Length: 561
View 1 (spheres, rainbow, N blue to C red):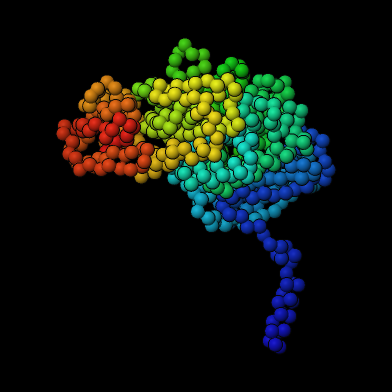
View 2 (view 1 turned 90 degrees about the vertical axis):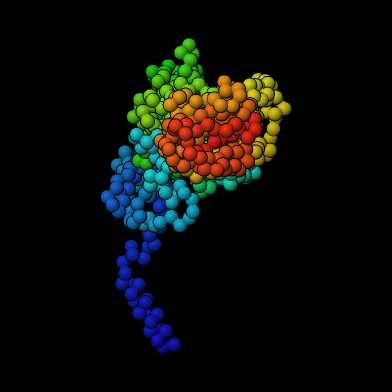
């Protein structure tokens, strides 16, 4: 007992001798995880976006400097959200445009960044990036990122507990990697609005942002990357342009980055704003360019940024058919990937000129087929599945899937819902379009997207180069009728060939350019995920005649040295 008391007295004496700063526990933050720091202004600002600008400079243990914008969150509360990129002690200091506000200006502190302890790839490998000259997205550590998105243009309308969380959890289990969303309701419906920014940002708008906060956080904690549009529906800047002068629009863009830039995100600025949202804007002076420019300028992570394009087309007579050559945004410094809206033909081979234009004239930026036909709205399971395979084999290293009552929860407009659509393979009726999200969440197509991901991740998919209609690599032939072949083909040199055949028939063709070597061949069933292997083959004269498809459904042929 005496020894115990003596030890306790020594410990108390030691603690009394320590400075108070040493007793304060330093914040511990996992690498790449969002860390929020709160500051309190000395007074309230009547117009917080215009009356004060808060920046926080973070200095990493290796000397890395990152400046993150702070944001107002009601009353005298200001916050900064930051995700550390390096292990060790980080220092920070605030800078406020109102230098006399000692609650916001000149504040400093530190925290320790430790390794991420979980299993999510987005935190183990780091945020997504787009590197110049790299045609696919990667994690921060350089690992290729497989983009498989699920579309939610009416995300805030989804009931949080019973719908939103259920879909996020299910899509993760099905193999999706990206959640695609808009912050505002579809086509500016007046019956639902998170906030109204036309008259400035005030206390009444914060509940809407708080709701988005919990959705961004949940998506991130599930391990998904969040491809998100900014602020409001695209036409808000056309319908109420006078309410958004350039300086205010820049401050709003900065506010968006401040609230959400410390999450694993991809920016796509606005829906179908490239070129001019079908004439809503002047393409040259499109205000969404200001949003893109400011977002890129104040984002220290340089998250990949694009703008969702109008419907893709190479038709020169079309005023709004978009491609890389016609883009109004492609030359902006902030623009680093392509968000394409492409619905390739489902009854014949695609118009190869369209993906070739992005491949040849897109500045070697990553190309994502961001939006196509939606399952049980513009197409059915076959079409939704085929779009993914066609996209990946034509140089679009990413695909955004969408299903009825999820891409637009609660309906997309009475005229669209009453129409009978036809993709020339399937007819989609109003009854099909009335399918509830509780059913469409478990469409067989979602699992088939997982099959597709597993197939591509079994090989170096980022090394596959699209062969389009190049007869040096593939000739549609062999089975009858040869002219009916619908295909997309890519290869990794002449070591690996992948061919997708999707016409209603069994015709295939011939692979060319092979060496005199042993190749392993197999059929992959994109509907079930099963593989039908062949005996090893020795190509004759550099040619391999692909057998007829096993049946009239779509199939993937795979040949590997």
